[in-house]
Image 1: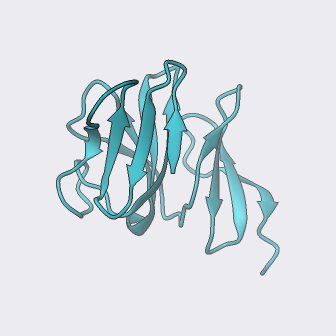
Image 2: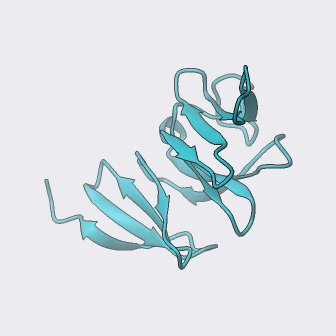
Length: 131
């Protein structure tokens, strides 16, 4: 997945390399801004990240860390480690609306869940009625 920030910076979830890379406009190389410490489940590691968005209010990355079955928040300025904000979810994408609700599809449950900031349970808003 990828996200284009207001300043045209492109943020890319590199699932094979277990990292998030940021590309500034006209840059000749990207900069690792999350993960990049090998595949794993520590707070400084990712395992097959499939999507990333930027929470503009907190200036942090929100990352779908697929094989770890979690969603992480990673401060854009810190770059050392993130925190798990949603656990036990088979995520495959992310989006955030203007009211800062986070929407996360769970591909094993065939549903999309909506979360308020700092909420860990969420509410099913689509699907979930079987396959």
